[in-house]
Image (cartoon, rainbow, N blue to C red; front, side, top):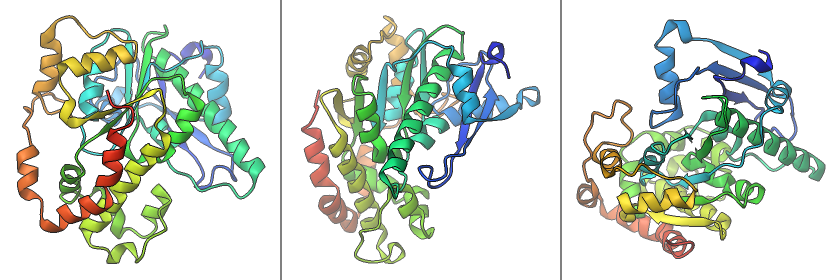
Length: 337
């Protein structure tokens, strides 16, 4: 792949060692997106759509050094904004709305960013930690350049929506790019907990040995994860997400609650990121009218707040109140709109 061929190509994933501060060798998988915009709610949905065309299933693997060489001729990129969030809180709705802004690329939980911004164990020596921080920052900056230029070759505004597990690296991201506007999206912990108890996500990690430790660095527990009640496990983990956000929120961050999401607030978020949404109100109303995670945009939105209150068991209420509500209340008081 030469410099002339970088347009249309994006890093698809990084192959990093579980302890990248110690083992520095890594590789990059690339995929050819052409001029296809990242229009689906999630990056991997766009990847899946492209892979449906057998003529487009082209992957290339290079070293991270090649990534640096391929992007060093591109202009530097300062992202328009970062979106951090807990689960089931409306962050996808926000990224869908921002995607309507002209000349804007929204990388919604794009695997390279999720990989770089996940929790990693602390390096055993200071010089290793400093080396990994420098390398990690350079990888981020090269990936910013790739995403901001792949679509047209010209510099477009870039919004990065991280995964919920990336809250555990939010402090690193804010230390590196404090000038980038950032929103943290939250929701009533009980509503999040009810959703989490009815899906495989967090509970799948609970039953998988080593997963909570590897993904979140979570070891300080009174009993083995497998022995915890599901309500306690999910509420404790949600509380840890909120506490990680509390440690990272700074003057450049706004905290937004699911309850406050509406077309007016969406325009305020866009302005905070230096973006301008279309003047036609119908464009944003369409975003609100559909289920935000449906790539086909065919499923209508249904307000599930009353249903979640009905489904909440006494155990869920108690767990959310004890393990997640204090951090949620404190976080809402910081950087509130």
